[in-house]
Length: 80
Image 1 (cartoon, helix red, strand yellow):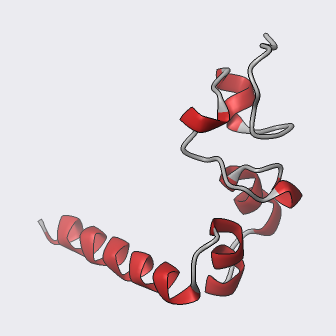
Image 2: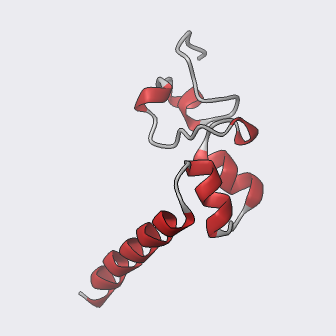
């Protein structure tokens, strides 16, 4: 079912769920990947920190910090 809401891009998960881009957690300001992080992952597979930083609009250093924090959280949950 199509809605008149502004979606991220053709094929984005928002289009399926009928969300506005402001409410979509997968929305990125990167038209080459239909403004969707999930589309970017499906299209490109594993990406470098540089590729991710371009899509997210932040520095490579910040992406590295986020990656390290996520891995730290995961390791704590695995060690339960």
